Image (cartoon, rainbow, N blue to C red; front, side, top):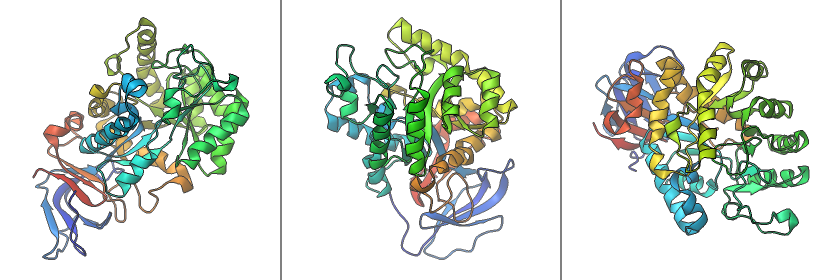
Length: 424
């Protein structure tokens, strides 16, 4: 990555500007960048100095960097066999490579919902590697036989004298039973740099042992996690699909429901009434492939709930974030861009762009004092916001499919004030 000269600025001249929040774009705008932040946004030409770098947008579409509220960087980058058979070092090398690829798809900030990525985050923040800003959850916390229990069925749980599973050894998951152990597991992730906590409280498609209708973690165990996270100034997000699981999580003080595809309208309305976030994914059946009929059937059931839950979320004014949750299939990682464009099936193009930028950023900022990027605003193009932005050759407000084809349409990527890509 090539940074600007000392005391110089980068000025993007004559762009069509979407600032991340406004429902209208502005033509003929200039945006100036000084260091890692935006120093000026103007509808008049910004005065420049000879040492400034000028990018002539030629009227092209400028927007904030996109974000993904539910990624698994390590899970995106590695297969199931990589996790259980591969060298530990290769897991991190693959994660760094996927981080760069994700940035080059236009995703400048992500919330990682399970995986040991704190060191990857630090290396990226230092400028040693290319990648997005990361809000890490560290290990997904699960009960025995829960969604994030990847132990083999013949292994003895640690409670009965057995050792940790491979995914626990590498920090991808943490199995903890009972309120005392849940407290320890949450505090362990916070010690490792988690900005929020990920708890799995219901069944899932990717997991082997748990039907979708299972309730995982008692109310007391969930409350223990919420209390420990709250004491650190942050919150708990829960993997859960069903009505019963969502309502138990809400009652226990959880502030972000991850997925929720099997909710009914009353439960979606309750999420809105309580001011809780619904972190949804526009799942389609082909997003994931499962080798066995049981998990494949669970995937179909989840995907069939997508349309209704999005509709109810809009109807009841639910705070809804967007994410992907691609996992254990590295070849599918580029589908992230396609899934971003798929938001146009449920929202207007401008609403989708808002969700991909400023709306997701509101959820990220719920990490409070654990937010590592609080120095500037995320997800907007405004004075003193982080200088994370994308220049597209085309107008996503008219054709959202443009953001799904970054190799073709994404011409300039700037993150932290640094020009990562410039094809003009």
